[in-house]
Amino acid sequence: MNPVLAAERLGRILPGEAPVTLVRDIDLKVERGEFLAIMGPSGSGKSSLLYLLGLLDTPTSGRVLLEGRDTSGYGEDELAATRLRHLGFVFQFHFLLAEFTVLDNVQLPMRRLGALSEEAAQQRAQQLLDQFGLSEHGHKHPHQLSGGQRQRVAIARALANEPPIILADEPTGNLDSHASANVRQILHDLTRAMGKTVIVVTHDPSFASAADRRIGIVDGQIDPDWRA
Image (tube, rainbow, N blue to C red):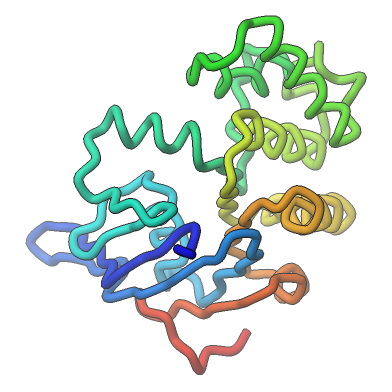
């Protein structure tokens, strides 16, 4: 069986008079249902790798395979559709739209994909809010929620189209210890209870310790000897 996500000789260089190598020659296989933590020093290329795996950035060399399919030839429309169907994203800052209610924010990916009616999308959004203890907050706007609540809304939004893969970039980096523990538990439960594949960039050793596997990135490469 193919890994759910794989990188082959993956590289990313920022062009210019003095080109900057963000990621180089990375080979990585992520299995279905795996919880993978990516760690490393600041500026080592962790987030750059995550954005490449999530098809948010285009590699300079190598390729990303999603469920065995080579994505290197995809155009912008196909990349966007693939992200909507297969990938969910959670970032350090929630990026919820301030002008929309919480319920509308969770519905946005479903509206973009267009696979559900408005009524069905609203029902699913409410179910996700219920799942994360936010049943009474759907009518509110993001500024009316705590940081931990906003991040739970962001996770609900990431799950809106039922993607098999969730990618999270420092999802607890802007939260207090209690909210961080809550988000860590939610992401951990996604693999155990829902069978999702979760890939997390984190500086937090306690977060990483809950993962099935940890890799270290140093100078844009996987370092098998790296330790937090």
